[in-house]
Length: 255
Image (tube, rainbow, N blue to C red):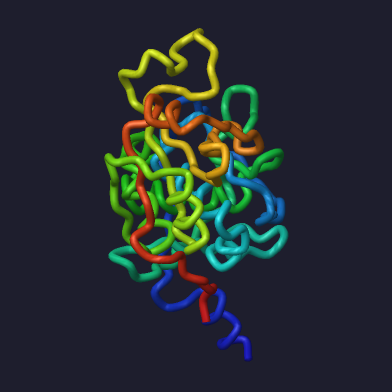
């Protein structure tokens, strides 16, 4: 019975992720002993890894329960199990429950909105260790890489932006969408210039209103807020979208 329980929690193909070297705006590691709340949206921290966090937010928006099968941890446990995907196949990684904090002692990178690192921090740490070897090097990438790493399903980049009706249909098919901002658009916020759409950023497309020709997005920096733009603004602000090639699977945890 004990052997069966251990093999369930730590399958033979599980690998220890270790502690990736820290990235920008992080001073040290500190332990977190909370319990993941999968109903909370993922929030991007100080890392420039919107290519990973926007797909995470987009997947969560399509199916909030999807990541319940991606993280396994008991209250107070020193380690968690995180499921990522390599070449479409699930790979479980053992992640210790210590996460980067800044000079003020606040968690610096991915968190649950309004909470601690939680399930987004666990998955981000597993991805940092697996795909780049450090937090610093995971700060650059393309959104089409984030989808398969988190879901096991490939994604395609489209330069022809979908209409509100097409977006509605894609989301109904369980095909999450993210949009990358147009770096040259004068309408985007830069530096101290305010605005809801930052440059050099990726956002989750979470809905559309075909009757009014509007698109609804969420920013992984502020995942609780809606950003609604017209179809024309969508074309001006965004350069491309990345869409899951197949419907999002209903993934499960280790058997």
